[in-house]
Image 1 (cartoon, rainbow, N blue to C red):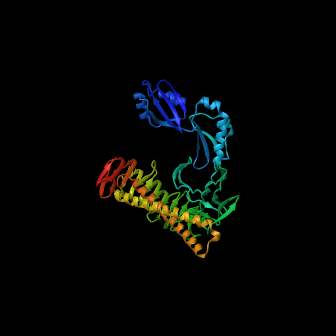
Image 2 (cartoon, rainbow, N blue to C red):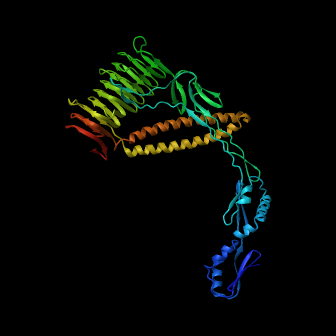
Length: 525
């Protein structure tokens, strides 16, 4: 079939192949673009041969390409859509529109496409050159993942507040709950909605991933309410997180003072004293201790948290004998002639006067906090607004310092182990998900393996919690400048003696700034 004939050449097709015979020179390869526009079906495959034929015009019939089908049907691999491309001219489409639509429908039928055919598009919107969507399936609506929410514990971030009469040191320390109080909930995953392929087959949705509520079954109940699983306290107590699980910890609340009526307190759990602690009495607890009297405590024998934090809202008048210790942190408004020792950090809102303080890091309020007299020992950093006083009271600040490279190595090892445990936990979760689908069909051996896998999950969660706590502690240490830091935000007075690692500095003049150790040198910023 002759496609094009002029004084220069004959362009013809045979069995879908296209040939050209050139008789006369003078027809440029660039002019051939007009031929391509006239015949959209034409696909050139041998451009170099065509160019040579037009230049030499030796009258030899050569192959230059092939004819594309007028209609190209493209079906998506997922059978969710189909589109068509027309390789013809606008004139051809206009003159043969009904026949083309009929051919398209025949092709769809051959491919078993019966759903989502866009008849409006077929009848009115077909175009040449570009692909046009002509069938669209219904996408499945994938299920939503389970949503787990827990009671949000208060952040232990003390602040010095003013009420117009006096400053006071305050923060949300213990979160008390009563039996039946809400502690969390789980909205189960949804199954989603079926879709449909253009072939008529169902498109299955992906079910949402389930999530497990992690809670202590001895102190918290999981109850189905309005399609949700709700966690409610089984006992009165304080909200805690133990080994990655939310729990209600034992809590002793004393409405008044600790004294003759109560005797010394030794409690397995957390203790709140809403009054004060009388002279020569003590409070010991395995968990957190909170003493809320704005008058503070005076000349107590001992306040000791074996595993948690201590918060004394009104401060301590120790008379040189009182001892306060905590496995983690101590928060106190002021410390007057007492002994404070914390496994992590000591936070002082107002001042420390003539006291012995020992912790990883020691902080006072950056605007008003003072360290006057006594001995202050830290591992990483000490930060205070004022050190010493105008009377030049002797104050000793010692920072033992650390090896930053070794600490960084420890952090990297901790992070690697943390990631490994997370990966192991994900694997355990996948196993439990599979078990969960067949719980009713498990034999005795399978049930035993299922229980062992759950225990393994609990151990991993506990390990991850401990590693995360260690990570935060190391990061806090690395927040120090150099390899040990003492920061004076307002002023340090003469007779203040500073030591970082083995390097000492006695202040003879008022000073403000940061001292830090690096490469066995003491620097000042």
